[in-house]
Each structure stands twice: as C-alpha cells, then as structure tokens.
Image 1 (tube, one colour):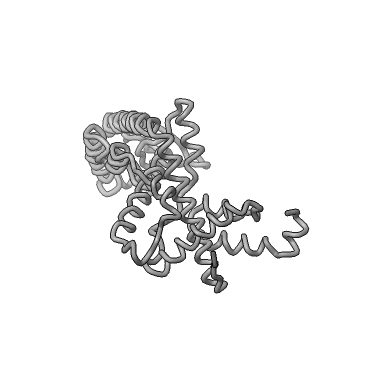
Image 2 (cartoon, rainbow, N blue to C red; image 1 turned 45 degrees about the vertical axis):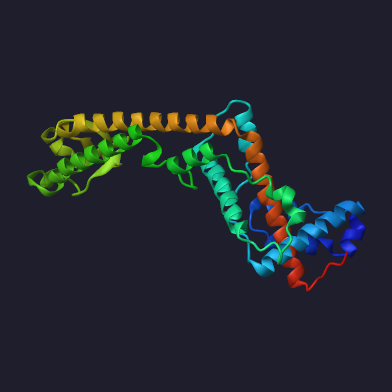
Length: 294
C-alpha cells in the first residue's frame, strides 16, 4: 500500500493514537512504524491476539506495565564483551521485574472466562532467569543506583565514607563557629577540587596552614584546606576511589551474568513490547467501539 493511499485513509492518525495508548517506549516506536499487511494469515493471527488482550482488559484489567528502554543496544554491547553501566542494568532489572509481575497477574485467570491461546507463544517468552534477577535486585534499583546491599565491601566503604565525612564536617564547623571565624570572609564550609575548604581573608592566610585550592576574583579571599583536615580529606578521597572501584567490580559481575542471558533478555523485552502493543490495539478498539468477527 503506497503512501498516498495511507494518507487518504488517514492511517497516520490511527498509528498516532495507537502510539499514545502504548505505555513503553519500544511499543510506541512499534506503533509509529505500523503499516497494513496483505498477509491474510498474519492479519487473522494479530486480530485473535488483539481480541485476547481486549478480553483480558475487560475481565482482569490493564497489564502491570511501566515504561522501559529497549534492551537491544545493551545486549548488543554485552555480545561484544563490553560491560554495562548501572543505568543499563537498572533497565534490565525493570524488564525482568515486569515479566515477573505479568506472570503473577495472569496466574489466577479463569480459563473458562478468557482464552489466551492466541498469545501463548508470547507469554512463553516471559521466563525470567532467576539468578540474574536476584543478583540485580539486591545490587541496584531501576534508576541504576547501586545499593549498599550489592556487596559487603561496598556497604563497609560507604559506612567509612559517611563516618569520615562527619568527622571532617565537625572539624570544619569548628572554624566557622569558633574563634577562627573572625578570619573568614564568610562563615561557611565549601568544596574546591573535591576537598572541604573554608573562605579565609587573604591577610590571615598564615593562621590556617594547609593548602590553598582557589581564590576569589578580587584575590581578597583564599579557599583553604586547613592543615588539621588534610589527612581526613586524603582519607576521604582514598575511600571514594575504593568505592568507585568496588562499584566497577559489581557492574562487571552483573554484566557477566547478563551476558549469559542475552537471548532470554531479548526475548523477554520483545514479549513485553508485543503485549503492550497488543494492549494498545485493544484500548484503541474499545475507544473506537470496534468489534472483530471470524
């Protein structure tokens, strides 16, 4: 079917409405690319699948879906031995969680009231790799934030970072609130070069020792890391560097587990996209008061 006929039929309006009813980014993209098919068997199959989702929507309600990103760029990188970043792994966790939620959602359906045979082949793809799911779930959240529970080493490092930072702040606050405050241009603690510093009036530079990290435009204020906190700041930077390395180790481990499940991850994401796409069709059919007859 050529573009002129599609324009006359206002097919673009249909795909636009369909895309708006889809929940996930991959299904929205699928809807926007939709074109009519001349294959009778394919059309009949897709009508039966849409009918199954329409029945499911009417009897059970909407599938527990939320937006996720296409996993194929991530699985492609896994395939060439690259490690994923935390956001990519968080997206994979979301995809696996959605698959589990849909499996639970469909568990107690009454087969006599609703026939899902038409989408059995799609549902069969929602087989979640248990080890990968468990490791992802304890290691990060959907946004890619690496959790303390990812490893005992990470938990210990973060505890030490927080404790050391508290000690630094206590010492720095003593400068802003104690006798030394009169030597400051402002009674604040700030950061320069990832180090805690105080803004010292230029003429009192010798009162603090330590290291000058910056100065104001006028040169009247120096941002000084006092000698008394040098070792604590050094320790903080060392702890932070170790934390970053531990996170890299965790992401490498999780990427290795995901690499073993590339096919499964692609299949699950494709199945979720298909279900969302079919559900969008069912919603559109309901909105337009459409019926299917075989």
